[in-house]
Length: 256
Image (cartoon, rainbow, N blue to C red; front, top):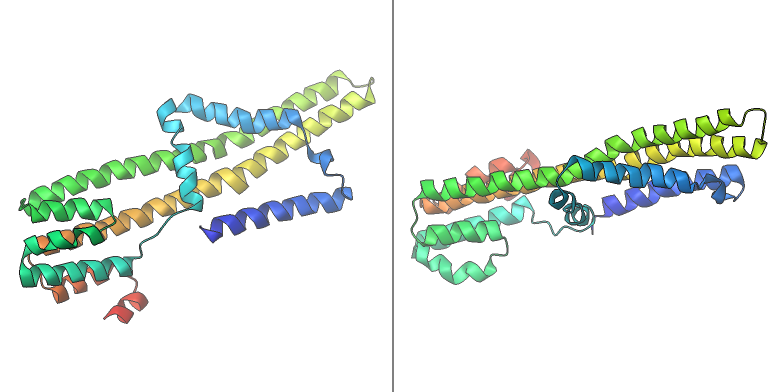
């Protein structure tokens, strides 16, 4: 579980609710508006559905899971595995890697190694894996786009709620004070909901998915370079030195 996402949500929502509780002396229902929820949250979701194909919108559930749960393989672990495979291939030949394939849990790495073991030309291997990386990048972009769009639409729907509330207020000027209060409540709470939904949930999730995508693309590029090095018969030492370029200076120095 990603503790950054969990703690960020808990503290962000906790601080906001705590301030509401303190200012209203425990009367939190004063901050609830059914109209505001419908307009801002449901409205921004509907606008996002309009803006993209339905099958792409439904990918939001898989993308949301990545914000909370992601089993990460570190670059250091990947380098050690690739160097180990390079040593085996250099000593016993590429076919000897076939007996080690059960150790490979990453589908991208498994696909590349199988192509190399089958004797495919390294140019064909690189072209095939590059296409897969391109497709993966596009899929990651769609997941991020869903949350980014909702984050953009939410404040606009909050403004819509504000305008509706103001219209109600103006229509009841000089009349029912309770109606004026209800209109003012919708107006203010709509803006509040739009801001909170966009800046605590949607936009942070979009940024988290963008970072996840960059990390995964970097890892797969490392795998690609390792696969090509193994196919070319590079020595474990030479391959390790090349792959250390993916690490920062401190991590690279610990592995040398």
